[in-house]
Image (cartoon, one colour):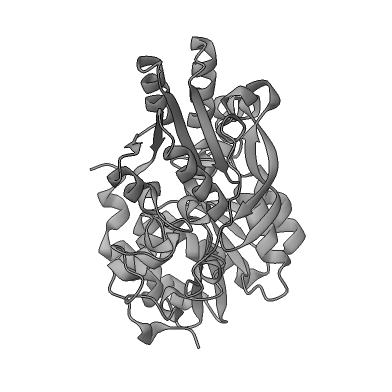
Length: 367
């Protein structure tokens, strides 16, 4: 199968690992930003096969995981209202809020539905004029164009019963926030290929230059990641710090202009709180004023929210790469994919879920 089997070839993987062993002469710490990359690294055991001294740091690249608790609590307050059809991607249904989750609300009678695209929610609103249809819009730059197109379509249809609870976040501000932390250990980044397919990589060039860190746009298959790591190590060994593109089959420097235009039309940049991390300036998107009528946060007044994180959950430290999931006292006991305490154990891109699915135990914890 073109572009699949070729990127899982074990013989090529062994050759890349050997080249890494020949190239690396010092310990290096590299962060993969994307949760999909984390799952491949952990599922395939790549992080454990790397030469001694090369350590992967798992970053905050799971959009479900970084959606702030207040947004989740607001979502559940809206979903519980009569006459509301609340729609979301499937991962969001089991992410715990302060007191409950969307799946439990549905079990108690709330009309909560899984959709596969934001346009599904628009079509639902058009077919159910007597109901308020709300879509929970989460994700990085990858999913923002689809949300923007849904708003534009709802606007063309003149729908007055469709709205979005927006919690889109942006990758570059998260990278700079990590690098500004005096305790940051990251020396190079693997940038998420799907984000760059939309946005290109021009935004990463000032980061690489300012912080003197290599950034390698990387795909998601095992060989993509091994090659991306090798490219990062080569830069580190030579003292270079530029943006390189491993994911040449899908990414151009300029990205997708049409998708970017849609996002700029519908959204504007805003400060955004990240779950477990805190508020990051200029790190999110909100609906532009001309589309404010589609903003569920304005349409539904929700007061009295007092978000409270579980004190046993170390999601924030996991999301920033400061700790491993196995460092958490609740990992595998109080917190499992069936009964999660935090979002990283729920999402298909969550680091805790990746470790649990791979059978990682506390023996691999950081000291």
